[in-house]
Length: 307
Image 1 (tube, rainbow, N blue to C red):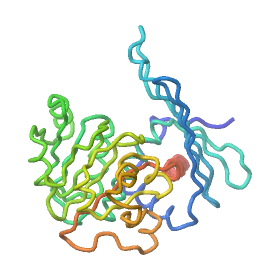
Image 2 (image 1 turned 90 degrees about the vertical axis):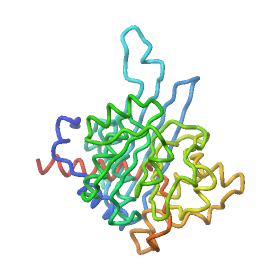
Image 3 (image 1 turned 60 degrees about the vertical axis):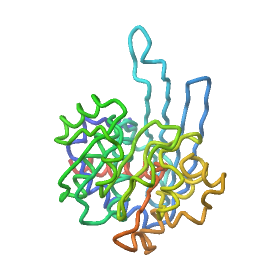
């Protein structure tokens, strides 16, 4: 019987630093085969993201997004997902893993790993934009990777939600977005914005900007000026450039070209230079490629075996 692994089975044994090490190692082998399938009917969607890393494993995460579940007489989760891990040699299923567990660790780990490669090592102030579950995980991940952080400040369109998360995370809720950005060394945004709202004028020299929220072709978080003043990086060129509005829209509108994307994780882990100066702004688009789901699942399986 193929085992099912949920958060209760393993999460207490997971480490953000160890996951970043797994990402580093995973990007030093052959580039993964990656593909996505998206079906939509009205507001509902089915997304499958598959990856194959030769010599490591095969994985597919399938998620359903049914926004109206929350309005049912008995409310149900709007997002449900599973991850299936297959053996690379035989194709036999090895495990079924809670998709929310994989997504949580993959998403925040993706951004934390990028920051470890691109942000200034002496970064002291982290500004979080958004106050949902992703923001909560991102705070934990960044604090693990940057233990010297002195201040975490949270901005959200609904200030009360920022206050609630700040109370949970020993952080500071802040009402003024330009102020929250102007003194930050690292900015991480995870919103549902469809129009760019993070302005380049608000970002100081030397900041690392992490963009998580935009995941559809019609979504953006950063404005054109911020893109033009930044050195831009992605996790995987295959999934983060053409399929997500954050970069696809400004490329289509000829604000930037594809050559403006300096490197992805594979290039960075094979010696491509990330940050060049203390004063430059680095911008990372977290596209959450399927290969990162697979690397996360393989890391989770390792921790299950060693528990």
